[in-house]
Image (cartoon, rainbow, N blue to C red; front, side, top):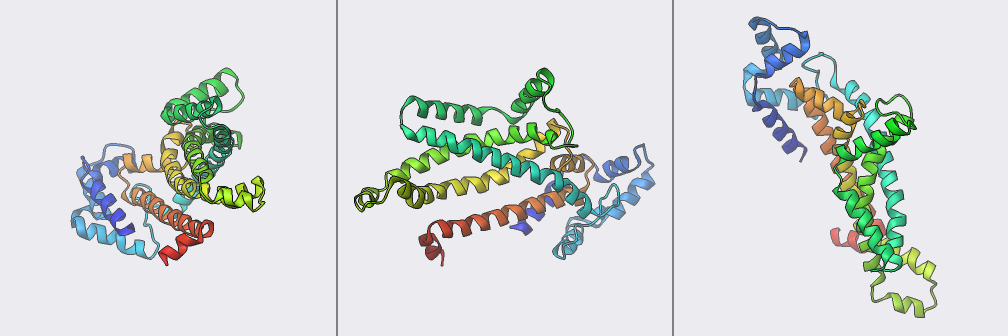
Length: 298
């Protein structure tokens, strides 16, 4: 998967319109440059060697964990990438926590009386949350909490307060998806045919909910959580730009604009690697929640 991702990314960058050597030279020197300098940049970046030599020249060191040096600044990519992740990972994790904390009470309210007004209210809230574009929600939160009420800062990343609005922007979208999945999972779990037998054996409703309904409902939720975490890393690109936060989003956009191949490829490879790790963890959690799943894959 990582090899395919690396090849696809390199192919898209290679065949993108425009001369990458010219773009890199302009970004590096911040001025018009003579043709000789452009040719020097082309040779340094390996663009004159052809597609496959250039790809293998980058992919070989990657197998040893070397992401190379920026074509624009000449600095190692790893330190700059880690700095960007230092801002993005707390944002994604905070948004995930906000999404879970908002979705659990909404889903429990919705399943208390299925079909009732609370159920319809929770579904309506979740549907509206899923339909609102993130850029619009982010601007709305800035207008309300930063401009009108002046409670929170709108842009930057200097303090914890700067994390609130971007995390809310991402977290409310996550809550919308999780609420619907949790509601469906709980209702399906409550419909299992073995639950009446457990009641006749004298097991309390609290015990049935904790030991049987919750694990059963958690399986589809874990699937969505894994996808949502990957989505958060993707959605952070737009949100970080709206709130002027340094992070993977700003790092990636700047790298694309300057055709900085090593930086773009580093972000994509790290994102793909995180996606693989998250899916592996989800599979392990499946086996813990329901041992029959682990036996099926064994």
